[in-house]
Amino acid sequence: MRPSSPSDSFAQALVRWQLAHGRHDLPWQTQRDPYRVWLSEIMLQQTQVVTVRDYFARFLARFPDVAALAQAPLDDVLGLWSGLGYYSRARNLHLCAQQVMALHGGAFPATAAQLQTLPGIGPSTAAAVASICFGERVAILDGNVKRVLTRYLGFEADLASAANERRLWQEATRLLPDDDLANTMPRYTQAIMDLGATVCTARKPACQMCPMLGPCQAQAQGNPEAFPVKTRKLKRTAQTLWLLWAVSPDGAVWLSQRPTPGVWAGLYCLALFDDRDALQAAVAAGPTGVLEDQPVIKHVLTHKDLYLHPVRVAMPQGGSPAVPGDWVHADRWPRLGLPAPIRKLLSA
Image (tube, rainbow, N blue to C red; front, side, top):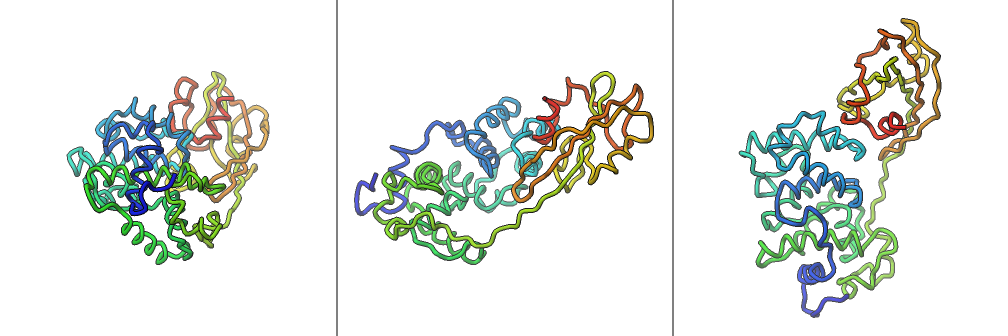
């Protein structure tokens, strides 16, 4: 689809396209509620829409507004978040809700600048909330938007440079709507996110369906997949951990809350050890059953591969491992915030 008029601006073409072809069924689109938009934006960081839908619905059922989220115990928040990953998002989500209540009377600030003073809200998330909910003329710059703009502009500067990213943000601001912002900014912001998610995709973009087909510089050059340019990549690392899967005679498991900072900070987990000898020492103080090595689990984080070695041991009545923690029964641990591989292991 091309812009309906050659005189259409970038913003006008996107707004018109979104009305006809954008996404209109996302649960956080039903109203310009800053709580819902903020919650969805935090969940959508590093997570696909198809995954977020179910989590979003469960969060709203348990925490229908910012006051309910602020009043909830952090363990309840982490429990519902379990499986989404990047758990610092959940901790900041909870802290942000508390600050909205304490510092802003339960109402989210109406400007991106004010929103950025809250925990876990960066420039792009702040811009999304401010533009969609309050009509502020401010640009978002998430991964999808960077792709759309660098292709449309033929922006070849390396985004590994902070200075170049600032330049792109200036271009993003220049292209924003100028008129009737209360109506055009929410639609425009949704439009540019939709375009990046559904048409201007990282691989095999559907250029023939794009409202920017004519003026897009990357398409004219025949190399849209070459944009955006970002040369610096973080080196992947690997770590091996041993998991003590201690089980009591009545079926409870020994869980410890992970320290902050660190891997799985704040979550409940089987006790972690750097090697098998350290694990064995933790259960050697009293009589135990046989240590049973389970299949190794590979768990992929953003920039690290974890190789997890679970070791199951049946503890005697009254016994416990020599590590901090508590016995937790099956009627309780499913509601706790557990790392995804630990939840899967215990559920099996």
